[in-house]
Length: 111
Image 1 (cartoon, rainbow, N blue to C red):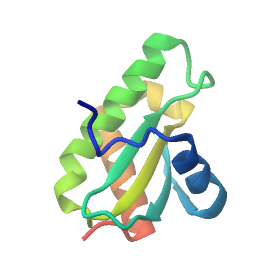
Image 2: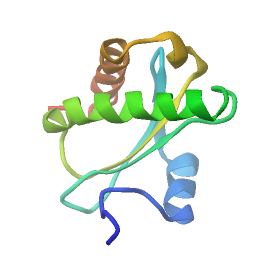
Image 3: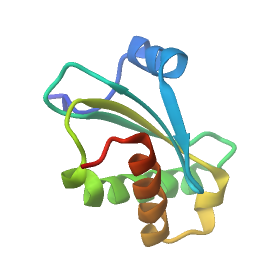
């Protein structure tokens, strides 16, 4: 069974990239838009510019854990794409969490 909170469709990604807003932090770039659902849908990406597969997987794990800690402070009904920047490689989870929190507050998607 697929989780409904994960963005999967190419059209959803294209709509986020094309039409909606983005906010950049030190370690993460966030694309966001309002959806008509009672929950948030999200995706975590790391391109090959971040590094080889081990570094990309670590970057995604850092972003997922940081989001998990911040999720209860978020407003419901958002589509979110988190894209790792290459600066995330030498960071700790607490630093990534602070960067994500600041970017989400700037975007206005936190309580």
